[in-house]
Image 1 (cartoon, rainbow over the protein chains, first blue to last red):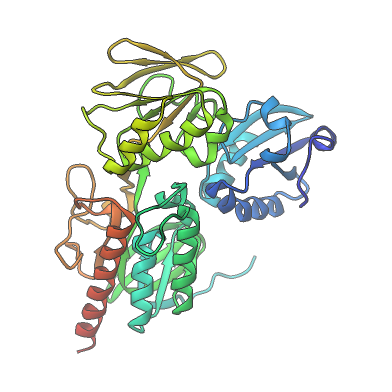
Image 2 (cartoon, helix red, strand yellow):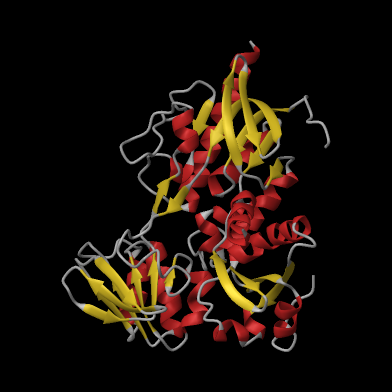
Length: 103
Length: 308
């Protein structure tokens, strides 16, 4: 998993029917803790959705999308935001929320 | 499908919760040669979110995240096993306990509960609606999104003071809303806050409602004063998460904090408790660590009694 940037962000969310993007920063403790969780879930949902991360310090898209709390996981369907999950949480809780929102 | 493992791994002590109390207990328990397992997710530890810890002896100033990582390394160094997983259930058995984690099961003769607390919410109108849209429970995570803006911090503790100090470096104006008539943070923090020209403390006041269209725009106080703010940082302490505690029949006070004796023993034989989850007089990393150490020592003694 390589970080997205302002240039390839649009392309990624349009390429995948469902895309889940993790907006994070290096100075955010809960973001660091969610990194392995996000990777694990990405592996589990392989083929069902595209998973990528983007560093809020290196992009303008976070501000454009009004990200004000991180970690923030934004769910896109056909390139459009449909929902977001905010904050650090347990793997099972994250997975359940994601499943619920993808239904 | 892979068949479930029938043989559960056995430990002398399982510590549930991996903050300062749990990891300090783990260091001591390992050095007592107790087979020790720590379960729990470190990101939930309150200290993980403190942008600076300035009162830990030997560390003049360190981020909470960095300090917690040092605790983790220290506990691992002396042989404690650490598993970043959520405990779903604890079952009392004839000779100890079974601890269920996702699809794994562990056996142990004793348990130290260092569950900490979950951040309390304001419970006012508009709070839920604006989570992630101006309402924040982690100032270290979110302060940077409010550069040049006006914000409010709710609370009077060290965490509230630290949040206001960090935000005052980035924001145009920082209000502190506190229900008492003097901040309960360390005086050194209050002195720093008083020197900040863009910090205003509003005492004897509570938030009543959060308003806005797509994001936070206004905070209404219980004196009906309205503050135009873009961000609201909630730092009003924590409450214990109660499920495990109730299931095990552990005695608590009315607010759900675990009652123990001076050895950190609960009313359930073999279960000890330490740190923020316990009814105590101070909720700080250093006091939690000390309680964890006492709990580990009590487990060691309990274990020796069992062997006799």
